[in-house]
Length: 379
Ligand SMILES: Cc1ncc(COP(=O)(O)O)c(C=O)c1O
Figure 1: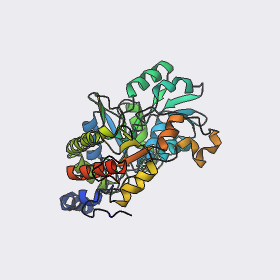
Figure 2: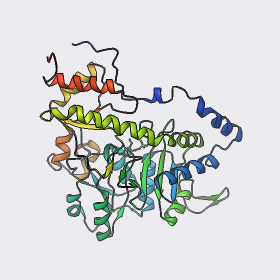
Figure 3: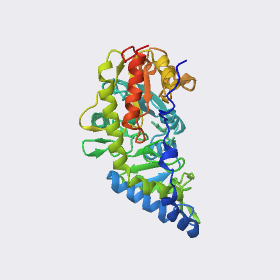
Figure 4: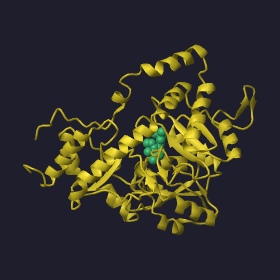
């Protein structure tokens, strides 16, 4: 086995570096501890208001996870047991889990060459039971949300965006996660905006939905002694609101570095088209590269080759959702979503986040070149 270049470790996670100096967070955390405001309260309200200003919506409701943000959004949009919700076959499990937990049936649509929901296939998936479309902005890249909103308007369906991977992504000047009626974000540690643990966010411009969600995420409590309706405890934690609010100040800078890295990587891989392809990147879309996806020949071999040499590549994901055991009851079979199935065997995620240097990107691209016999001293 070839020796890894120990000077070049391209780790997938950057959290140890992002928080190498946690001191700047501690002043406010100390204030929080002294205040005893451990559930909801001013720190949460401040963060929600700041996030609302950042993405340009009226209401933000912080939750404990992106998964809960999705479940609560579906309920708030009126999805009921027996309804069908259309989503894409190549997403993270939580998208589908949320639909099922809300009591509805997930109906899959294939993805397109950008690994986003294939909008052309949505109309034929609509039935009299369809209540909502749940597109995912996969990998931090906008789905064709404008066309989805058009279809939904004509067919009188709700759109709930899964923007869990896409905080900061935009279509034109508008942030994704602000097109649908009620939409979900994740602040899981490896999302662009994170909060030292799990966290989620629901956003909406609808006053009635926002009021319902504020009560529902907190047991349906109007005040300490009065329950308006039965709800859950899905509150974001105040200490996390402090972290999130501070990190939001650096969001645009972080996205700028990710974009710079992704563009360089695109260029470095451009002449390997025979073996490596990156998705088309529409000019009006701002991606945030939560994961940098490429499609490659001999994927599993390349995956091992890179990992053996210090490049922590990942696979998001090797099995599309309709072929998971959990989906057995939905009666899909191999061949139903050929694009998602093909991509599951070809996609690889390459580390390109804000702590990866230009030199490291050259090193990684050099390894890929070598692997395909195109490098200097090719083996
Ligand atoms: C597309 C997508 N949806 C939903 C989620 C769920 O978010 P969380 O992990 O915060 O519950 C994730 C998280 O990885 C995701 O990537």
